[in-house]
View 1 (cartoon, one colour):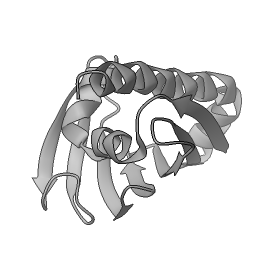
View 2 (tube, one colour):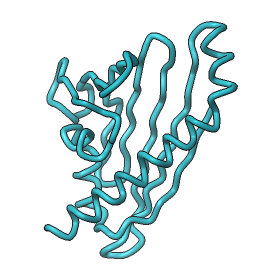
View 3 (cartoon, rainbow, N blue to C red):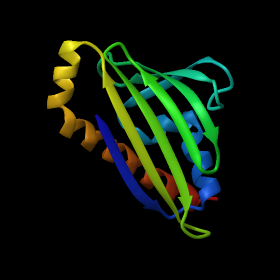
View 4 (cartoon, helix red, strand yellow):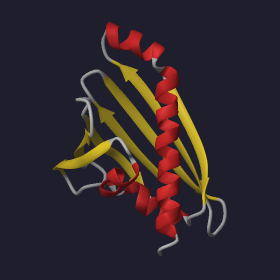
Length: 147
């Protein structure tokens, strides 16, 4: 299953890329994330691995930064026992002060039950993806005004 969200954000591309690629910012804009826990590597750099711990529930993802081609691209693999998510984000400069974020998430559910669940949860997953990206937009625009 794939979910794609595109948003125009009123922050310069390089500034937006820095905010987006720093995992320490994730709990500031992901309302359902309690914290991140570094596992290995330099946090946020290609090859680094860290844990995403939710505020509620027990679906903990382990994130691996697959590639980091800032200021234009960031690719992550999120892995949990029931699902893996390939996350590909592109940041396209629209002007000196505006950037388009294109976030694509591809879900691979593990096991028959989880695949079945994934079929029924498609709408909720896509809404959560959009909610996260819109929350990042609000965060980035509030931080962009501070720089």
